Amino acid sequence: SQKIEQNSEALNIQEGKTATLTCNYTNYSPAYLQWYRQDPGRGPVFLLLIRENEKEKRKERLKVTFDTTLKQSLFHITASQPADSATYLCALGVTGNQFYFGTGTSLTVIP
Amino acid sequence: DTEVTQTPKHLVMGMTNKKSLKCEQHMGHRAMYWYKQKAKKPPELMFVYSYEKLSINESVPSRFSPECPNSSLLNLHLHALQPEDSALYLCASGQTSGRGYQETQYFGPGTRLLVL
Image (cartoon, rainbow over all chains, first blue to last red; front, side, top):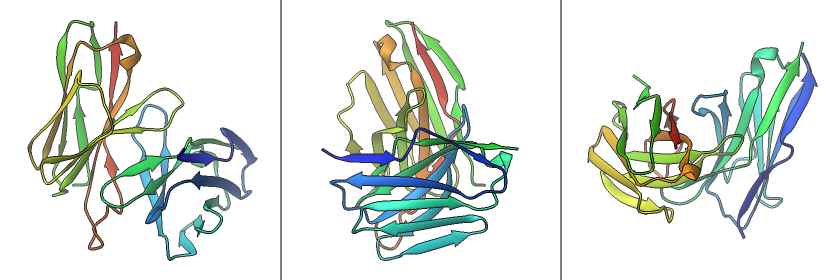
């Protein structure tokens, strides 16, 4: 069966540290992978996209890696801040217009 | 304007009611989506419209009926829903890249639906 799993349901880290979130998938062949942030009661907000032929993408304090052999993406937030506390979702983009979301990780950055 | 709007924000309906959710975007995106999200779960894809035509239906029960009147509007008609259909319903839109797939989606704030 097809699965997209994110490493843990909840992750707590100290302010200033690097948060690392994992997205693992099975039985998909994604053309690309996205990361979204979702705050309670709000729709997801797009953060970064990485394509199947790319190894790494960066945007400000965010970094995403994509290993299609391991079927895994890592999402890093460096110098984390309490304002980074939210749920982070990975989403696989397959051919056409289909997206499938991972289970999500709730990140709490402790001051 | 990078906004997707959804109305209403909240909706309470009985199992015999008929109601509609509305979604609007003015970004010129030609793909629009409906997702269902239960508490502490990821969004689940329901329907995809591409160029105003239904391209994907993820085996959604017929009590949910989507409609795309034009390239800016997307509706979800609800009839004879069950209490387990209570959820946050999210609309999204996206632009197809030159490679023929969506590179990002813009989500609306959602409609919180409660079925009694």
